[in-house]
Image (cartoon, rainbow over all chains, first blue to last red; front, side, top):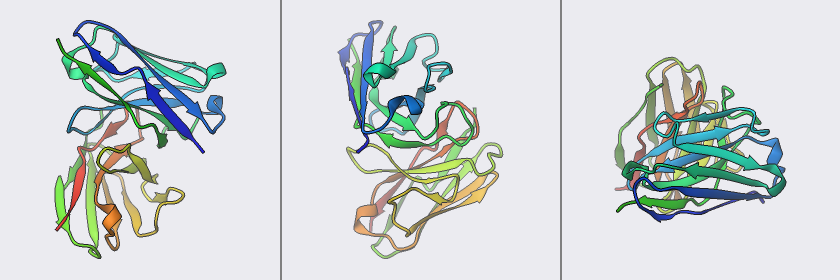
Length: 124
Length: 107
């Protein structure tokens, strides 16, 4: 059974940093690209970042570019999101999602499994 | 970025009703369109990919159609467990973008 479990969320002050993790199990992690998607309270879904199976291709939404860094450790079956210079508008539930393919930016991508999310609150 | 617009934003329907949700892209995306269902407090779930392909395990009452800029998600006979928010997502080009969501409520 595919499982994705996010962790690392919490309350953080504006300008500070936080590192999210996503532990994957039930599938061959390094066969798949992975994505981060967030959802602000009461709002819709927003794609944040994606990474290919071998970390060779990475992308970010403009709203987080230069502040967030996605990475993965295939030996540990884990996905990460380092979030720096956090802003109030980064407050959201952050989901990690498995991409059906091995590159995050191939035409026809879809996210076939999602974790339950980890809540990040940026407030003073 | 490609903008995705769903209509309506919400609707009320009864069990057994046929429900149709529309998604429009700001430019042609061929059939690179996915649909997700999200129930309150839960993660999104993939329903349909490539505009009309049903994800494994999804009931056949869900169907998708369309190409270019206009797409529809249809629930042929609404069931109690279908009350949720539905999102479309374009997979034509990164950054991947979602519609604002359509909330399906009980009438």
